[in-house]
Length: 95
Image 1 (cartoon, helix red, strand yellow):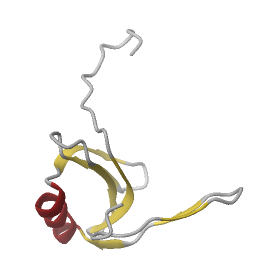
Image 2: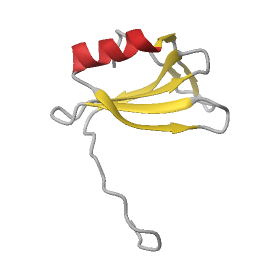
Image 3: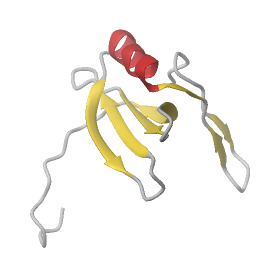
């Protein structure tokens, strides 16, 4: 888990609660690059106006998923290992 950005608090009760801490995006992406060698590999705009970004280190497989709020805060959603880039499959072909 990447304590440098934030810690996820997961309660393993019947209703799983996840709380993410947030910080300035510019600081978060510098730390991801310097400490983990991660760079942005994907981004998308959610219906609520939040930008969801994935950062990964293709050599080590580490990855970070974050949500960027409209005011520029980066909120840690999840981190992990074994990241893979997967080529998109053409429409209509099971993938």
